[in-house]
Amino acid sequence: MDVDDRIDDVNAVAAATIQFAIDPEDEMWFVGQAGETRVWMKMNSDFPDSSAYSVWLGDDRWWHVDDLPATWTMPAGPYEWPDTARPAPKTSFWD
Image (cartoon, rainbow, N blue to C red):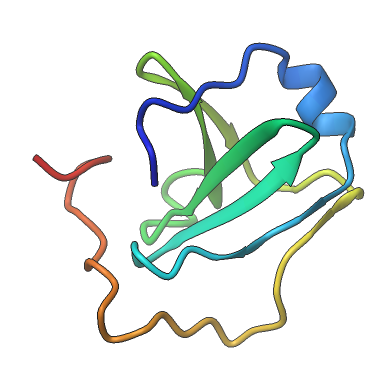
């Protein structure tokens, strides 16, 4: 996950066709591409107490969603991250 990435047009990203893949570096994260925009999405481990997914918008902003747009495709589960992936942090990011 790259905290410097940002999404300025949420509507364009929501309408884009995105094929997400497991982020091999960080557990519970997925990465996709919407044109030139890299899209980072975190699967929330405390669902249903919070939204199922959170999309990083940048500048400490999030888009929380339960139902993904129909044009977004997730990898087939069950999801397995490499042993080298950082474990999911207790907060949003690692120090």
